[in-house]
Length: 336
Image (cartoon, rainbow, N blue to C red; front, side, top):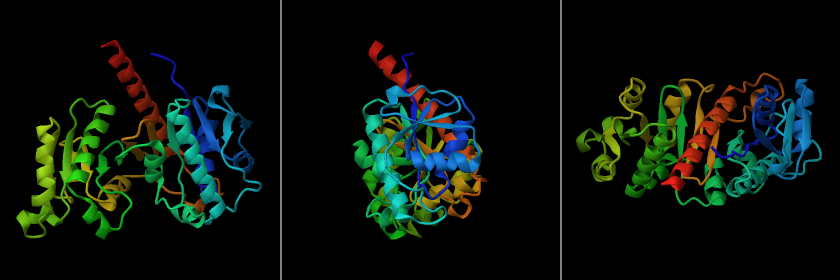
């Protein structure tokens, strides 16, 4: 296999636990990754935690030595003084956004093999005048993807969202036939990227009991069911619509590989209930790999030195797995 470029890790919101879990992860050693963010912030958290880590600034990923006990850092934002921990800061919001944009540019250029993002705060970005509701939308715009989807995964279940960061009222309107088809196709592709040759994709209904034959709503009859049939005609092993209150139990028992959820909380509550330590967010549809931990900025514990880096470390493991799969698939295509 050809040489694989290192991963990029964005430091996330500087007022939250992002820099801490990034530093703790790199302190373990053995990670081929470059941090995108603020040298001032990363040096401050290293001192605060008492870690034996040096912070080395580089201009491009190709300059990285990837030595243990060293944070190789590309400065993407100029912060003179570390922003206050544990509270919303427009400085942190702007820095987080600039860092994501820089990492995306590096990924599109092939300078890094993928991106692992530490948590950001939507309120902080809004305070900085940035109108994106989250990572996914930034990545789609700057990554040049027409349609993306979130896949949340842990050891028990995987789920892909039809709609992402939208009010429930708007999500119902957005969950049209085209959105269903895009999510089902991306779920199929995402399962294959994780090594499942023919993923069994279960599509959750929107209404209680999947509409109960139209008694509790007809979206399942008008939209979701026809999308499932259309996906099956494309060779995708899709089924449904299934009641949202039982489909995850069936997936956990091994009946399905991936569940397509209609809206944010329908998909995320089951994953997060099983624990944040092993939960990973994977963005499907991008021209590069992107993963992130399945938790937020945790302002309530920022700066206390107790943040658990396990979910970030799992996100990095998933990123390496996906990058390797993409590389092998690309090499196979060139030999055919």
